[in-house]
Image 1 (cartoon, rainbow, N blue to C red):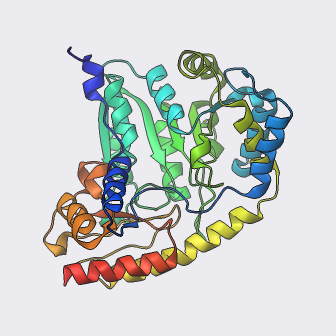
Image 2 (image 1 turned 90 degrees about the vertical axis):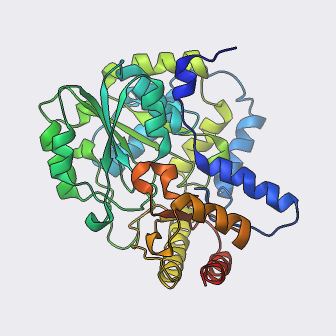
Length: 386
């Protein structure tokens, strides 16, 4: 049977494919260091787990409104209003099972055949996948190492046309770990302020920042709140990847359509998980601070280690938990080195091309693993490279 054309247009997230390969090798008895998947290795903080258990015992096991309970939506709107310094109401919020539905629903709601979407490349692969699936035209904004993987404003302005309907920005970014400066975000806003264009601001790593780095939300700027969809969630900040909990903060006119998407696909986000999410946002934040401090320690170890490998050079990330070294001087392509490190060195990484065509010449390392394992991986790579 022939698949629908749209099914063939859909891409994937290679991290899960490499994870499956690595697990197969482990089942065969090979030791693998996992530096490929963007998942904190910490357990969810106890207070959040306790809130979920209490929820079950209290019988919170039924459907909720598609956009989420009003209690959850208020907790989100209060948190986002405080952290972004912009006033949002619970009515702006749709609670979703993870962050990806916010991308999916936004693109399906806004993009028609032939509409252009500007997105970062190298960038999270699901952006391009969803644009293609919806029949839109992906317009990659190349993030160049010589520009510290920041947005080239002149290049960005050239990409904006009358067909542009959505611009996606991600700060701190996956896979580069770099933040977009306030100055550059102001320039992006100035270019878009008089255009009929929405912005999807992916701020999923907004709490995982180092040194003096800042996640400046474009929604703070005059006229931008009405044009911006904020994507955030619980997977990264609270080590809740398996809980599947995220949210979008939308202009009010988009909420009915996004809620219909929820009705047609998921009905609602898990009622028990929503109780845990409320505790995550309103409860103690000490564990988050500890995780971020540990990620910073690991960042310093892995960047120094990668820069000590022959043929590697790595910039220091501002946030998230990824390092994105240039490996062109090794003589391997990104995919070749990904495979060789996995099968010959026992280190699972991701080729830069998993994040778009402009990722060639790079590998992504997730340092959501222990310092001990990071150091072992560095030594294994050194032995392989020679």
